[in-house]
Length: 534
Image (cartoon, rainbow, N blue to C red; front, side):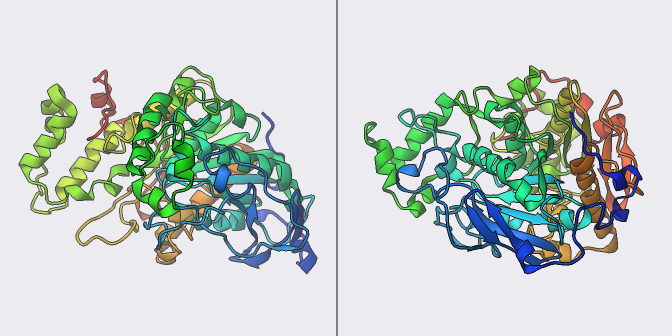
């Protein structure tokens, strides 16, 4: 695989890049913020310390007959198109990600950010980030790449894709259904590859990355035939390699259609296309998975990875120390009987062994203590909860995935473990710890509107800076090697991980230490582990 030759990096210091070595001009002319894409000219702006080109259509609005159809090319435009502000989120319910119900289906756009003064011939490495949100929420708008772009000579890209039932509904009568949102991702990656050179990016040096559902998507792109050749490095943050069979997805799709009064098989799709977006959102499932057994995703991603049938590219893979603390707040205040019943339902004949290793907490006077213990069981075992993910994230499942990839490609594993940082929102008496998605503000400071990043301590800022530099180094050269930072060796026989820890500490963690932290020796004794949490 080609590695980018960047002289300043070879000298060993990301910070000593010059405008000359970066092909970045020392001043900004207004015309330099005009870019000609294959569909028309756009004009960006300078904000948050980078040049921004936002809300660029990569596909036509998926409305009318295009609802539940593969993405189609956007219409060309002749006038200059302003590209200074983010566009709409894709339709989703009111959540942490969207303050209001979003019903605008005209949302398939790309956002591009580059260092100030980048020349068209710069050929900078490109990082494309795919947002998470359980395939039902989120947007590329909230995960701007400005920190990574300010820290490294790279072009950062995000995009939107169809979510929920609009993106992942599967029906027997709808050809190719189940993965239209994933096809959107492929269409976006194709558009980026064809157009990124006009923005000063290198179309032959593209890294894709994603967190949560974005991480699941990255794994799927590694195995999907239609994604081959669109990237040459990958980053999986708190993701897994999961999907559901077409028959299972179609069964859920039929149930969804009946709920909306569209029971006739012959007219089911046309009936659903006439429904208001709000009705579709209110009837859809709480989360979705990709559908395998389709032309887009012929094979379950994990099966393909286990068989070695995936793109041979360098990979970063990792998770947070307390993944499931972000999902089990409902267990705050459980009684001992409720906790033991939970363990019994999930682990059956192994329940006693699990309770011996994860007993009723000694500090149970704290109502949140039992929730932390429930989260520890789920994180170590490696499942997201509620049966959502059969091969889940965190702990031992992440270690197993890293080891599988490492059989064929360079892999760099990490764990994000600061427990004192901000969580998703404030819950009185509850500590999020290093829960799922708590690392995102460190890399993408506008992830939560900038609230978390604006309150970082000096130690947290040190972690944020280091993560941005490691990620940038990987995008630039295929390995996370950054001057002045601890070495991050490839995942090999010692199965060690780089630990982003408390107090701004960054240190290499041996495989034995990681396995002990998550009791992987215990879970490996169970042939059916990891268990789906209920």
